[in-house]
Picture 1 (cartoon, rainbow, N blue to C red):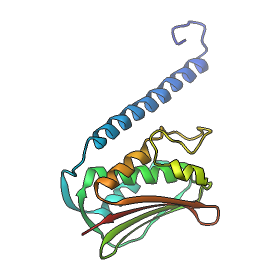
Picture 2: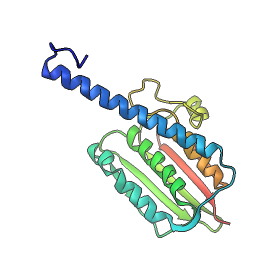
Picture 3: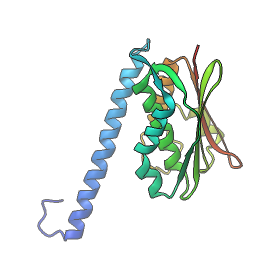
Length: 195
């Protein structure tokens, strides 16, 4: 279409934007499929280091600043310094996936509450947003490969982020769960054993 000479500048710009958006979507899909394939082949956790998880989460919040600030969303993160021994890069993907989803599904000018606490036996990460509640049916499939709760496809995604997050958490012998009601909002919780 771009090769046609009779396009207006506006039409040409629209086509270019469509190409850029679709290219970005396909790149994200290919990257997620490669990440998932790599993680699925991993049975033993490698590259374990002792690191400051609180600082890592602060960095992820800053990394996603444009996304949440453009919607007028407030992200609260109030906690002490928590340390963990695990794969730093893989866990960063978990926090990015969960926070990115919370931003995506939060209405404008809402608050996303992020917490992490160190109990004696585990590290508990929580991410709460006030978007539309997830149905019980969707909650049962939300961690399935390619599953998207948003059947309208109004939000960008490919249904792999939560699958990847769950596999990473399981590699750390942890659990990830979700609960969602109209009254309390949508909560994702990651529990990582520290012993």
